[in-house]
Length: 114
Length: 153
Image (cartoon, rainbow over all chains, first blue to last red; front, top):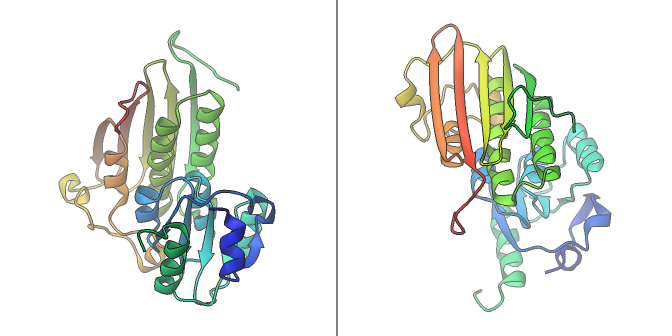
């Protein structure tokens, strides 16, 4: 599914990577432990997290993730946003908690399973 | 690409320094290594494995050591990654390799590191993994990723 479709449906606030919204979302991953995300996320995943430190950009970049959603209104640290803009990593803000965000995205990209 | 080779079989060889304590810079070396491997046309699975190995190695150096070096050797058959650091070393490697065991400080944990998964990730994403350490001196890791991969990795 197209990243922009998810962004619009869930009213995600786009902080960076706007020109990559045409990219495909293949799945998702939820986690705040960076080693867990490094080990278990997959290319094209949309990553849902509360971490705002700039290393989330490095993880998303190294793992070729579709983007990062910061939940519960968490704001990216200033250097995180700078790095996300510099590396053109899609970074979003949302007010929903992680459980609800994951459920909604799952329903959108896996409708027959949900 | 700047490949400097002392060995005829090496397709690429380079060393990348990593400073201890600099969390803001973590991911720079692994990002560069990923770019180098992709530009060499190395298969995606190998590039992803190398990315995990080098990122976790960077985080370990930044978290625990004073200084470290990540060496990348690319040969036709495999990618070899060596990580050597100057730091406190590991007194009980078997314990350090246990999932969830960590000596990370609160500061490290607040950033989402220090879950005791790093060395396991490095081992799990390597085809061959070797670790040795001298307390008070430092730790050495050597990892091999075979380039001819099974389909079902």
